[in-house]
Length: 118
Image 1 (cartoon, rainbow, N blue to C red):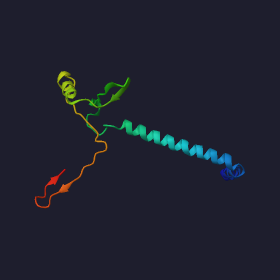
Image 2: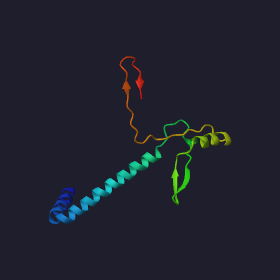
Image 3: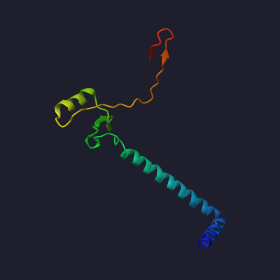
């Protein structure tokens, strides 16, 4: 029975090649997009899950108006982090994280003293 289904599907593919190519291409693009979206969601949900006290970690966002548009970033200043830590008793510790972006480091080792210089 299933052999006949494959035979009929194969014959239909050969009969209408253009329609088949469009359908198969659309299916492939849709599946690829769905997989990429699911991978992105998995990455977003898994942030900070390796910590022991994951349920006690919060991220502070900063809202700034620049050129009439509201910009939301997760960058706050050092004084703001210390003020949050001191003024709010619920906060045990405040940590600032900054991604480096495109930074280039060069390591040069002096031959005589063998000290690393950045």
